Amino acid sequence: MQNENSLVQFLYDYPWSSSSVLETIFGPRFEKLAKTKETRSVLIPGVGTCWGVKQEKLSSLPGVRRREQAKIHLINNYGRDTLWMGGSPGPWGSDLLARVGQQRKFWIRVWVDNEGVGVEALPFLRPVPARFAPNVADLILTTSVARAELIKRQLKSCWKRGSKNALIHYSQKDGYLRFGNSRSQASTGSGGRPLEAQEVTKLLAAQRWKRLENIRHE
Image (cartoon, rainbow, N blue to C red):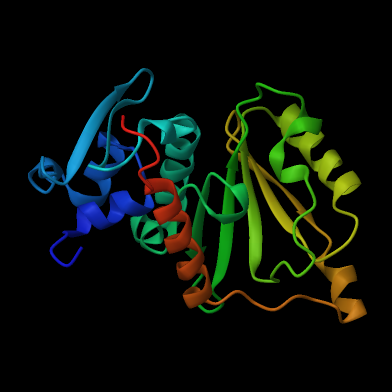
């Protein structure tokens, strides 16, 4: 661990990152950092060559397409440096987690909806922890305006309590819908405690080692 380079560290937090994402982060010669004794690559249809650390299990491949969409969206809208504070998959089941903001830092949980299941079955509709932090927001990436509007209606139905905020992006027209109930929550004085960087980093580290645990040989 002491001699690992920055690309290896990035792959610990963002397993199976595509060549296009790594080139954006590290430049066109990123493969020189991807030493064979430390990394491995696989070809994923529809995504291309993806890279992980040597001990990364193939069982972590599901969800790569969603996670790559999440990374690309963050890079395009918040800058590549955003990915240095966060991880994929993020805590609490999200596809990706990142810390953004200049004056007030806040965390974004990114979810990608490929419209393959009914809206009522989407994972982010489940109630979040009661103490969920006031500096955490959800970013939901979907395709059509109609789907975004349906998601917003479902959020309104499911997120009736607590301080929760979501931004729904629809790619067909590159637009956003906003959902938030934090104003009513603030009036009750029962908001949660802000999540600090150290706390989230600890959660990410625990999740990373659990993912890399050598349960079976692949």
